[in-house]
Image 1 (cartoon, rainbow, N blue to C red):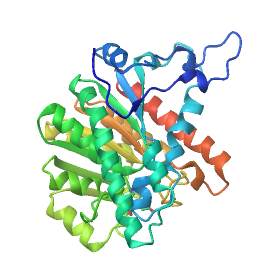
Image 2: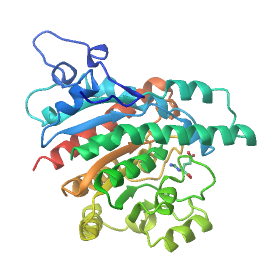
Image 3: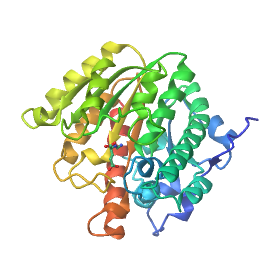
Length: 342
Ligand SMILES: N=CN[C@@H](CCC(=O)O)C(=O)O
C-alpha cells in the first residue's frame, strides 16, 4: 500500500463524458485510477501519466491575469469526449488525477496583486503549491514514467524540475517554447521565475528557450539568462527560418546534454491562444506541434508541461476560451503521444 500524497485527487472521467450509443469516447475507455496506490500499480513500462494543476495563483503572483485554473477542465471536457477509435495510442495514458488547489485558490481569491502585502501572500501561496506539485510528481518520476502536466501557470515548471531532479538524483534540462524566459528575479515565487529558481538551486543544468521575444524580457532577465549559460532562439529569427530545421538543431543540442530534460510549452507562445499574456504575433499551432514532436521523440524527454492555458482570457469570452483551450491542449497531447510511440 502506497501512502497517497496529501493533496492528490483522482479525476472521474465519467463526470465529463457525453455518451453516445455505439461509440466509445476516450473518457469511457481511459484508465483513471481512483486510488493513489492503483495509479502507481497501473504504471507499465510505456505509460504516460497525465496530471492537472487547476490554479492561477502563479500568474496572478506575477502580476498577470487569472483564468489558468480552468485550463485543465477545458482539456478534460474536450479530450474525454473525443473518440477512442483504436487508432491513436491513448491506451498508454493514465489519467493520473490532479493537484488539489482548491483551498489555496480560495485563500488567494480576495488578494489584489497591486497591493504589496497581498502580492507577498500570493507568492507565499505559490510556494506552498510548489510543494504539493513536487510531492505528487516525485514518486511518478521515480517509477520511470513520462508525465504530461497541464496547468495552471508556468510556475509549475519549478516543482516539475525539482521532482525530476530528485527522482533522477541529478540536475536536469529544459527546452521551453515561450516568448518569455521565465527567468525573472528571485523575488518570491510566481509564474515568471520557475527557471531562475531552478537554476539557483543547481537543479537546471541546461536551459534553452525557443521563440523568445527580446522585447518581452527585461534587460536584467536576459543578462541573468546569459550568465546562467542558457541559450535561446529569438522569435524574430524564427520568423525567417523553417521550424523543423530550427527544431532539428535544438533537439540535437538537448540530446547532447545527456541528462533527462523537460519539454515546456507556454501556450502564450501560440498566436491567438487564450492565456494571461495573450499573443497576436506568436508561433502557429503547427509550429508548436513541430516543437513537441521533435523533442518528444527522445527518451530523455521525461515530461511535457502545457502551461498557462486560460479560457477566460479568450477575447470572445469563456465559452470560446474553453473550446479553444480544450482543442489546443488535446491536440498537443495527441502530438506527444504519437511522437513517443515510435
Ligand atoms: N509565464 C509567463 N511569464 C510572463 C507572463 C506575463 C503575464 O502573465 O502577463 C512574464 O513573466 O512576463
